[in-house]
Each structure stands twice: as C-alpha cells, then as structure tokens.
Length: 143
Image 1: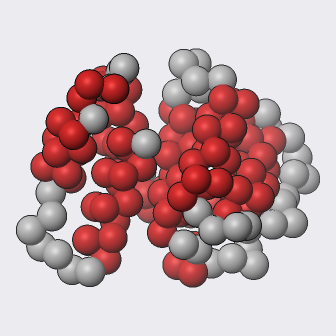
Image 2 (image 1 turned 90 degrees about the vertical axis):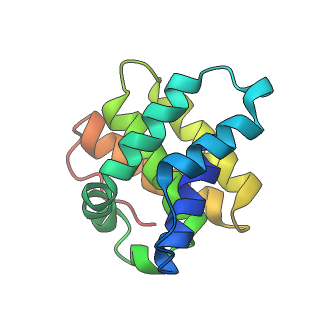
C-alpha cells in the first residue's frame, strides 16, 4: 500500500505539472508515516524505484493486452496497480509468486479502484502472465 500511495501521488502530481514533486521525498514521507507497520522497507523502495524506471516500457507492454482501453483513459490508480504487478511479475518473479502478485493487485484494485477495477486488473495481469511469463502463444485478452 505504501508503494501504491507513493507512485499514485507522484503520477498525479507529475500529470498536474507539479515541478516540486520528488519521488524520493514522497516515498520517505510515506515510509515515515507507516514505519511502525512496515515489514520490508527495502522491498517497498525496490518496487517504487523499479516501477518508476519502467513506466513507458510497461505501458508499451500492457497496451496491446487491453486494446479497447487506452492506458491514458484507465484510472490512474488502476494504471499504477498494473505497473506494480507488472514489475513483480517480470522483475521479481523469483521472489514473488505470480499468483501472489496478481492477487495482491486485485485486492488493491478492490480496495482503491472502481467497481470494475478488480476484474479489469485481473484480466490484464492474467494475460500478461500467460504471454510474458509462461510464454503461451495466442493468449490475448478480451479485456
């Protein structure tokens, strides 16, 4: 949740042309706020850094999976959740089991997204997993 809040705030403020926004400052503030309940600070820092470094790469990877939904029109919170799960599925696949990454993303979408967010996130990530992780051919989504 700390990573989600950090990336969402940074994305939102960046899209509003807030030149004062600093990802490291937003992350530090959120870590400090939740320090007592934070189990793995290093994981949160790696997740935030990894996602922020790969947003364009992930957009290019995700867009063909859900062609009816241009990523520019997807809710920011869903967009961030998809990026976080994509990082976990592709870069942390030896540390985070795919089912765990997808399930956590779906739960975040249920908690913070719209009524249909969890279904959308589940469909996109399921297809991403089949195409990029398993390498299954013809696994395009109907999302």
